[in-house]
Amino acid sequence: LEEEGFERAEDTGWKWPNADHFLRLMYHPGKRLQAALAMVLRVVSEEGFTYGSLTSRGRDGKNWTTTNYPFPMMMRMSPEQVLNWQPRADALPDLLAAHDAFLRKQGVHTEELLEVALDEMPAHLEEDMSRQIDHNLSTGLLERSGEGEFRYSWRGCLYLWFQVVKDMLRV
Image 1 (spheres, rainbow, N blue to C red):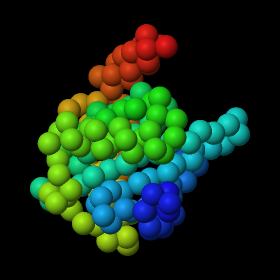
Image 2: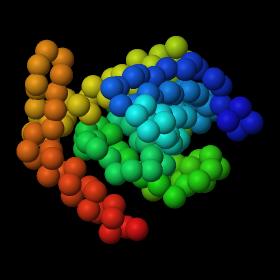
Image 3: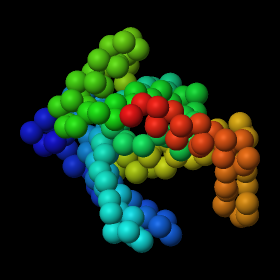
Image 4: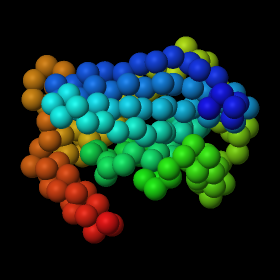
């Protein structure tokens, strides 16, 4: 990514009972573009996968993300988050080209985008995740199951099932 003009921000991640998530966060100041390179290791099976996400943030709080995450999305995106899913983008140049085309189609210009300091990137990522969780709680796909915890509701389980069926039909 450095060859493409990105600067390394920091590494972050989280551990779930069945998987470890590692993220390397990078930023391209000229394009006002965040990149997250992810590696997910499933603890039980010792299998893993990688994916990348590119995010452009509007000054109004809206953001546009292009990702090659290889599985259907497990939650709906919030109204402020616009997703361009490119599961067949195998390399970074493919993902960058898809993101540039996505922004053009959405009518988004670089000068309209928020400039993000490298040390603010983890906070933006946390805010995105919180916004998505809150949206899924408010639409009934998730329900609270304890202090700071949530789970899928029956509607959420149906949503997941339909996501899997759609993915099987794509193959």
